[in-house]
Length: 575
Image 1: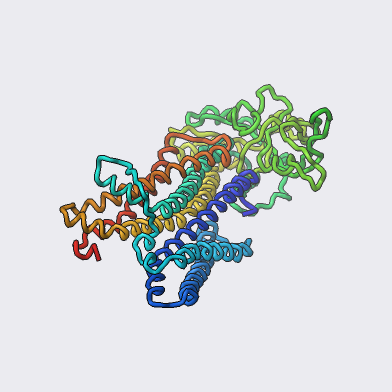
Image 2 (image 1 turned 90 degrees about the horizontal axis):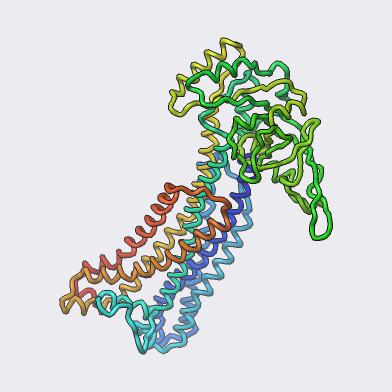
């Protein structure tokens, strides 16, 4: 969406998507290796049967190699096709448009995962080829278990714990693989859920410092409509601003309206604004690097939205970097994130090695302003700058403001308040209009939220695949212990003991993986992906519910093989 958002938000999305993409790729690689390893390891007994029947090793290897290549090829093809379908569906439903980009990545994914599947699938086959037919038929090799000379159980008191820990020690290889897989999945899940929610709340808090949804604008029709249109550019709307001149004398706002609006009980604040589209120039500055003085920035130009406002009438901390405007009316300016990423950004192609907006300045009209802060603002896609109202009027020669922003009390009836303001405004000048900005601002917030929710959807398939792997692993574990379970049932053990054993083993695997994944995921989110995060108790609660729900769902699903076996007759369990 190159015509939507702001440059700063797009950079955050790009960084987030890059990291999520790497994690998804790693999860896919580990998932592929684990699935193929389990699939081929469970064919060890078939390998032994064919060797015992006298089949040559070359014939047996060719058979299993053909099976491995067929399954791998079909799986990769199906995955690529499903990926394009999911991409098209999500893009069309959420954003209403679809563009094919980076299609060359599909064959790269195909080749990488195909090679990984073949390599990891060959591992158990080569291992089985080296053992005798009797060993291959042994349950130890069939289930990938290992015999240990000595075994120290995790618990010496509870029978269930002792049996479960003994079983886990015997299967170090598959357990280590499933723990690695689930740890990476939980890192992905934590970064996606926690990072998505925190980043969404943080960006919303930044935008709320410059845009209050409880605000209405009073201006002449053309100016107000243009201002609303500039707000809608954040969602990708196309707006023509080249021919509109905010500085026309007939757009000057009558000062008497402000005095009457301030007296209304439903109004909490009134802010006079001068909204202009100006051609601004970057003012470079000197800095000292080592023992040498060097230029910072250049003299780049841009046509942006410049808004004059009284610093006393706006949130004092609306800058996310640097500081806000001083109330003393100095020649200062706070620039939007898109301006800072274009006009005040290093550009090696133009020979600009250093650039920092907080070190440089901005030429607006006839005056030079110092850049003191950077803000996030959705209006005009972040190509905006805020300056003191009186200084901007002197610099541009515009005699008076052209807009009035009115903040309503949260406890007031919004519709009644707007009707009262409209009647008062019309009594002064019938050409003045009242514009309710709540719809445009809410649309921007909803659009931003939908984008983050789309990103949070990415790990869903990986989580589902990991859950299937967890169930497959528990099925392997239960099958290995069928004879032991049959003997336990024969000597009087209750059926629920099988479920308890599986529950202990599943809990150990899931909690250990969840602990590792959660730790690395939180560190990645707070340290690498998100600077100055906005975190509340509600945010933490929502994240906790998401993550705990995922673990609980995987735990419940992993008990299915044990529950099914516990309902089986004793004679059938041992078969």
